[in-house]
Amino acid sequence: MRLGVDDTLFTGPALSPTWDPSHLVNGFTAPVVPLAIDIAKVRSDVEYSPRQADPVLVAARAFADALGQHGITVDGAPARVAEPADAVELAGVHSAPLVEVVDYFLHSSDNAITELVGRLVALDAGLPASFDGATQAVLAQARALGVDTTGARLSDCSGLGDGSALPATTVLDLLRIVTDPAHPELRGVATGMPLAGYSGTLADRYTRSPAAGLVRAKTGSLSGVTSLAGTVSDADRRVLLFAVLADATPPGGQPGPRAAIDAFVTRLAACGCR
Image (cartoon, rainbow, N blue to C red):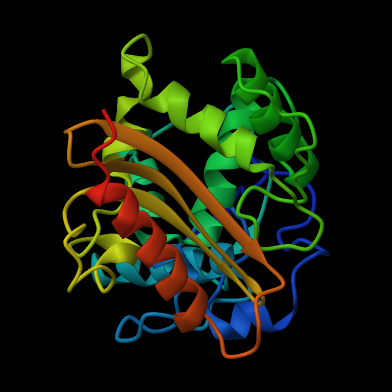
């Protein structure tokens, strides 16, 4: 038998022209495709593994090998094909539920998974599952929820590429929506953000701060840019929303800007302002 794989669910380029070509080697992202194994990581023993250049065919070859282990011989190499109109489903496998996928990218900040979810939003909105379709769909959905997107520009859904800009007011509006009891379907976003000193991209921050365990927030880290946005429980047991966006940060990497932001949020946690 021969093995073909149809990966036409997504359209357009798998890599954004706004991304630095080194991002694939550095493990900052992967080609945005509908089929991959372990987010296209080449290695599983490092945090930022290089990613496969063609995750779809890598997954197809792994499937061919698995078939061979069960006595089914695949002739030749797997190839891309269009699904026949009369195809019959013999078996199926499903990914994790979308809520778990969102929880994963909130904790890990994996750019490729974020882009993939953006494409699913585009498909749900009837738009092309491409970079342009995904960014249009995400901003449209935010506006439909009552978020002010004035001044918001997205070149991709992960924030990795050049050209994106989000005002702090837009970020705060999003936080208000996901923490609003009127939107219980979005509560998982608020509770899924990393917990200071304990989980995800905040596991190694606030470890010696009295704000440990009181902050749930999403990190943002690019060259010269550091941000943190989320919720903090203050001394009066109130839940405060915050968004700190710092650009044009000085040389020296992330440690300095992160320390400054964490000190500010720690002061918010100590606030008792009734």
